[in-house]
Length: 270
Ligand SMILES: NC(=O)C1=CN([C@@H]2O[C@H](COP(=O)(O)OP(=O)(O)OC[C@H]3O[C@@H](n4cnc5c(N)ncnc54)[C@H](OP(=O)(O)O)[C@@H]3O)[C@@H](O)[C@H]2O)C=CC1
Ligand SMILES: O=C(O)C1=N[C@H](C(=O)O)C[C@H](O)C1
Image (cartoon, rainbow, N blue to C red; front, side):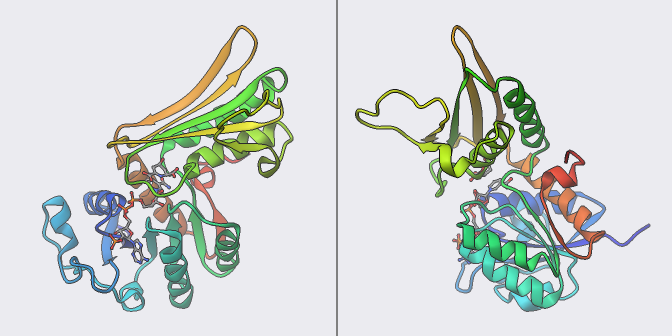
């Protein structure tokens, strides 16, 4: 039997961190190597297995450099500023990264691309198989509904989410804009208020809902005259994100460097 993929997890006590711990512990092909939280966190020193009712020999630490020694991969679902600190540690240790964090500015994305010249990085706004298939469906739909259809993207998430629109909604916008030969930066409209005037047909509109415990809903509307096509995805659990991330960690183990996303991991590219 081959050696399990040794996985470290950043943001271990977070909503995704806990889900990732469960996914890694229940997969016989992976091993929980380390779990990180910031210095001063109440969780430092505790067993990350506690989150899922198990006992492990791992203890949550804030010493990322030490914890990465011997790891194959760090899975990071935190915040952009933390991810970039972890990225530097991974580069120093020669450890690959799976990054699910959203909300990066262009400079942060450029830093990820630069680091991927020396370590393998999977960076994707949504790790679920279903959402990644949805991206493909959107590409097909936009290629056909390329005239006379206004594109609007609506997303809904829980009350704790800090970035908007979601990374997934933005990627949906990019996929549709690319298929229509437009640049999302030029055509995106983020919310509307007041006397907006009539809609410009080249725009792609975004609307954001935040409330309660909504895990993640996305719908793209192609609004024509007399009809509307809607392509969307609804998550009822975070486990698909965690399982996709573990799949990405296995993918990374086979690579020396490069920037990938879930389309690469799932063989959906092209
Ligand atoms: N790509 C995908 O498939 C998905 C992406 N996401 C994205 O993942 C990210 C995390 O989401 P979620 O788990 O819900 O968020 P949570 O707030 O539940 O968890 C974030 C974790 O990161 C830690 N953290 C935050 N800032 C820092 C820092 N500066 N240094 C060290 N640790 C830090 C938090 O610790 P503390 O509590 O101490 O702040 C916490 O443990 C978001 O960007 C979200 O959009 C979410 C789901 C799916
Ligand atoms: O914060 C979340 O919860 C989610 N974030 C990701 C995003 O911004 O697209 C993915 C998923 O929708 C859940």
